Length: 98
Length: 178
View (cartoon, each protein chain N blue to C red):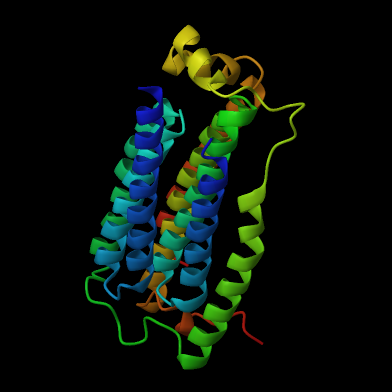
């Protein structure tokens, strides 16, 4: 019943997340925007699960597990970079830039 | 009566969706990372409410516990640890970067808006109310738990490997001098 509206809301949230990744420089805020994108996709899964069976809800579990793993490793990397360079501004982290 | 409750459901959906979109926008536009994180928590709570509207009550509980609870506490903890409470002067990209980002985001939104008219093929779609009926039969947790420990058992076990790898990776990154 609410499949179309759910997909529209999910698209808007995903776009906000992408815009955040594109315009922000703070590594932690960019991580939060990635979490927002993952959540938008979760909403899509749940909306489809209502029409196509419970498998979509199972996949949300896996997305949550991947998000937790990503947050743990990503924040550890941010901490390591901060100890090394005293900043989390992505404009200053350009070691791989040609 | 069913007509009224159906309309209430749609109304609740749009209220939660509106708050979610507004708070997501605030999360992206706030300069202060702590404010960003707290607005993201609001968004995650609204998504949990949307999950309830969409017949995924158990996932809504997990959303609050795992996302709004564990993951966001981890984020806030790191923000406090690094003392990033004040947003820096260069937190946003320059005007050109902002413009390019906005154009790309609008382009993506236009492409994704096609999804709005998507309908699953009638051959595989369940009848309306099938999910609620299954939940009434198996219970809210059982509906999700039975396939998780039956058809999806191997992916579930692989998830534990993934989490183990993440724990080891985080510990190694925290110990080593880079």
